[in-house]
Image (cartoon, rainbow, N blue to C red; front, side):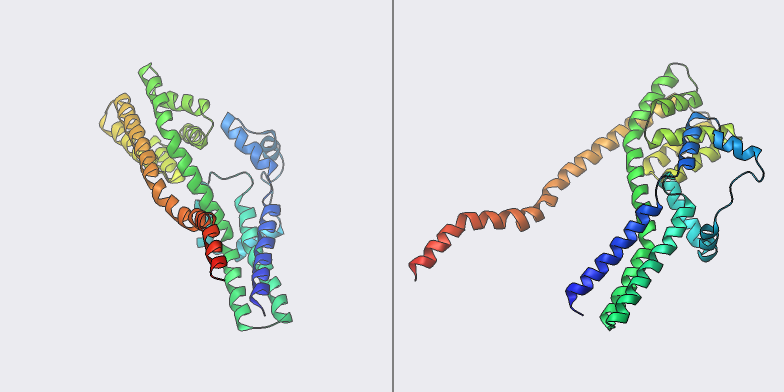
Length: 299
C-alpha cells in the first residue's frame, strides 16, 4: 500500500477518534448544576429531588457498567487522579471518560481491520497497532494537559491571592475568613479550590487533611510549599500574618524570576524558525536575481 494511503488511513482513524471524543464529551447539565451549587454552598434542586426519591442517585447505564468492568482498577485510580488535577471538568465525568477510553481503541481497531481486509501488509499491521495504542492514551493525554494548564494558572494566581489574604488577615479577619473572602472574590481555579477546602473543613474534615488534599489536587509546587508553611505555622503557633506576608513576597519574586527566565529563552527559541523559515526566504530574495543574472551570463 502506498505511503500516502497509509498516512490518510492513520489521519482518518485519529480524526474519527477525536470526533467521537468530542461528541461523547459534551457538557453534562446535571454536573454543571452540582458544581455551581458547590460554589454557592447549597444543594441543587436536582439533588433535593434525588434525595427524596427512591434510591437517591441515578444508576449508571449499561455502557458505564460494562466499561467499569473492563477497565482495570489501576486505570480507574489514575483517571481519578487526572480528573482531580484537571479540576473535574463538567464535560468530562469519570463515567464518560472510561466509556470513551474503551470506545476509541475499539473504533480504531475496527477501521484498521477493514483496511487490512482490503489490503493486508506488515506495515499496515504495525501502523494499526500504533494508532490503536495512541487512541487508548488520548483521554489520559488530554486530562494531563488540562491538569498542567490548571496548575500553571493556579501558580500565576497564587501571589495575588496571598496578597488579598494578607490584607484581610492584617485587617482583623481569621485565616479561614480571609480564605473565604479570597475564594468569593476570585474567579479562577485557585478560588474554586479554596472554596472546596473550606467546604471540606465545614463538613468535619481536619484543617491539616483539608490543606493536604488541596495540595494533592492542584499539584502546584508553589501552592504545596505554601500549604506546608501554613501547616507548620499552625503546629508551632507562628503568626499567620507573618507567614502570609513572607509567602506572598516569595511568590512574587518567583513569578518575576520565571518571567525573566522565559524572556531569556526567547532568543534560543527564535533561532530555529529564523534559520528554517526566514533566512532561506531572505537569501532567495537577495541572491535570487544575482544567481539568475549569472546563469544568463554564462549561457
